[in-house]
Every structure is written in structure tokens, then in C-alpha cells.
Amino acid sequence: MIVHWLDPMLVLALLVNFFMLGASRLRAVIYAVAFQGVLLGLMPIFVHGEVGWWLGLLVIATIVIKGIVIPELVSYAMREVFISREIDPVVPFVPSLLLGAAGTGLALGYARTLPLAPSHSGSLIVPASLATVLTGFLILTTRRKAITQAVGYLVLENGIFLFGLLLIEAMPFLVEIGVLLDLFVCVFVMGIIIHHINQEFSSVSTEHLARLKD
Amino acid sequence: MVGILIHILLVVGLPPLLLGVIVKTKAVFAGRVGAPVLQPYYDLIKLWSKETLLSGTTTWIFWVGPAVALAATGVAAFLVPLAGEAAPISFAGDLILLAYLLGLGRFFQACAALDTGSSFEGMGAAREVTFACLAEPVLFFGLLVLAKLSGTLSLSAMLAGPLSSSWQSSGASLLLVLVSWFVLLLAENARIPFDDPNTHLELTMIHEVMVLDHSGPVLGMIHYGAALKLFLFAALIVRVAMPFSLRNAWLHTGVFVIGMLLLAVFIGVVESVMARLRLVQVPRLLVAASVLSAFSFILLLR
Image (cartoon, rainbow over all chains, first blue to last red; front, top):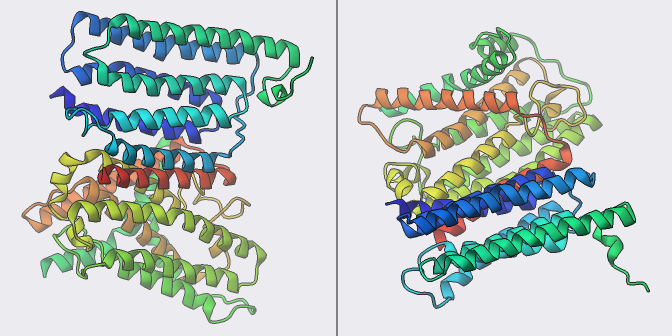
């Protein structure tokens, strides 16, 4: 019965994608990533239908890391480095929203043509995963600040996590935890880099990092 | 016969009450007593018993415009089923007529504003039609979703009983349609995140600026037409949200009216807790609403 709630939750996750593409405040986007992380953390329950001890552990670990620790680290970096609250995009908000919508539509169309296992073919998991990866890619490439690129990377990882839900029965717990640890380290490293960029250049816009010098 | 009678009563009587409820809700939020709920009716009576002042630069378009706008919205209100099973006028494809009757009304309203020769009103008319362009896809994608779900092209059939079973099969799409239509309602009726209906002399106005030169009965027509338009969009939303139909026509009418009043209270709450958007952000919100409704349609096609 609980499995029926999976598709509405995936739709909600897709809506969060649109929100992230259209929002102009950095903090709002960080909260949205945190919300998506919590949503994704809950999803294994809905895919599986019943909660074993290791699944429960996975759910709790994912929610804590994706929903609390990493967004907290990113907003800590934002506070410490005095990054202004406005996002300045290379591609303006309306075109990036439209690109995101087009990407989501294409993902929904493309997922139908994939040779999936019969039990997965009707589900929204694959298109939602592809659309989230595309959104992460859009945020990664079209936003100027280093911190928004970290956020884009998080969204990208959320998409990959969604794809991993298909293998929930086969995937060992350790692999999942390994991925989360990777992510954690990445955000950590990103925080250190942002801090250094800030000390060197007094601005965290990646536009200034386009030229190489000796 | 009873159904048509109820329909006429609702269309004629209810629209100003919605405005009154919205204003009352905002007053309660602000800690004031506020105007009586029936105040919009008193305002209309007051305006209709005054004389019309016409500026020397205006032509016949100036007073024909609001009349056509009111007439077009009035006809459109007879296409939307309210409390009964079917609307008084109903045929296959009437959803297109609904959208374009609203467009016709807007065109004449903008013409009347341009006719005054005031640059301020011209600016308001330009904004009104620009944002209407962006708002139209929201309405159409939503109607497309309903048409696809019901397999018909008539509003009465689309919003009839089978909709409740569609809520179970594709509730996500219908929910998205509801949300995007609510944004559409706020945009089309110049409610707060888009425009402030209380201000009459501010540079970011969209809709209210168009009616500055109108007075007396013509202004009354404009106000009543605006209330009717709000009523129309609210009726669409309430019908989608409460798709069941009761056997007793009067009971169903009561449920419908309660739904409308609840929606009006909700609009008042939204207006109380939100600030108006900067003008440059208005297109973004409208495009986001269009994306939502397009997405709800794509979900259905899957």
C-alpha cells in the first residue's frame, strides 16, 4: 500500500528541481536541496515497502547527511565567506526554467524507450533520476558562484541516488554509505577551496578563474 | 430549469461577495474590524447611481470597452458549470470560446485605456496584455489536462462526475493544475503577488492603472466585471477541487458556495502574508506556473 506513495513523492522531488532553477535566493536553493535530500532519504521505504534494520539505518544516515549535515555545511560556508545572497546566473532564470522543463519532458519521453526490467518500466524513478541529473548539470554549468556549483553537484548526486533506488535489493549497504561519504568529503573540500578563493581574490565568482597564468 | 435558475442567481449575486470576503480576511489579519462583507454591493450601487464624466479627448471606445468586457465575461460565466451537472451553454470546444471571450474582454479594456491618451494608462494597458500573454498557457495546459482525462472538449463534461475517479488515477497532475490555476487566478485578477488592488497611484501597477479615468456607472461595470472574472476562475478551481456532484441541486449549490467562500478566505490569507513581487519577477512566476501546468500534462502523456 505504501508503494503507491512513491510516484507523488517523485513528482514532488521534480517540483523541487523547478524551484531550484527558478529561485533567486541562495538560501532558498540550499533549503530546497536539503528538502530534496530528506525526500530522497525517505524513498527507500516506499520502494521496498517494509523496513528492515539495515534499510532503517540507511534511511536515517541519508536523511542526516543529505538533509542536515551537508546543507548546514554549505550555509556555514555561505555565512563565513560573506557570499551575497543573490544568485547570479549566466543563463537567466526564465530560460533555465524552460530548459529544465524541456529536459524533464525529454527524460520522461526517453525513459519509455529504455529496456528496463518489467517491474520498473511504469515507474517514475528513471525519468525523475534523469531529470534531476539534468537539473544538477544545469545548475552546475549556468551559475557563477563556486557555492552554487557545490549545490549543483549535490543535485547531480541526488539524481544518481534516485537511479540507485532501482537496485535497492541488490545494492550493499556499504556502497551506499561510501557514496555518501564521498559526497561529504567533496563538500568539505569545496568549502576549503571556496575559503581559499575568497582569501586570494575577494570574490567567489568562478568567472575570474577562467584564465591560466604561470 | 432549476439548474439554470441557480446558475443565474450565482453569477449575478455571488461575485461581489467574494471580494468582500477577501477584504474582510485581510482586515482580520491586520487586526482591524474592516468594511462589512457586503461593502462591494454598496459600492456598486453608489457608482451606478452617479453620472459618468467623459473627458474631451475620449471617443465612444472609452465607454464601449468596459461594457464589452463585462458582456464577454458574463457570457463566459455561462460556459462554466457551477453547481449543477452542466452549464446553461455547453458544446464541444467551448473551452476555446471561454479563453477567447476573456481575451476579447481584455482587448476592449486595453483599448478603452489607450483611448484616454494618457501615457500612464497606456503603460498599464501594455503591462496587462504582456502578462496576459504569459498567463494564457497556464489556462490552456490545465484545460488540456482535463480534456485528456475526460476525453471530451466540453467544459461541462470535463468538470462533471468522472473527474472524481481521475483524482485517484492521476491525482498528481490534477494537483499541479490546481496550483498553477491558483497562480493564474492571482495574476489574471491583479491580486497581491502580482499587483496590489488597493493602490491606485503607483508605478508598478498593472491592472488598476487602466481604469483611472473611468467614473460612475462605467467604473461600476469595470468593478463588477473584475469581480465576475475572479468568480469565474474561482469557480473553475472549486469545480476541479470538489468534483463530486450531489443529487439535490440546492444542497450542491450550498456546498459550491461554501467552497467559493473558503477559496476567497484563502486568497485573503495569501494576500496578507505575501508582499508584492517586483515587476521583473512577475514573468518568472508566470513562466513557472506555465511550466507546472505543462509538466502536469506531460505526466499524463507518460
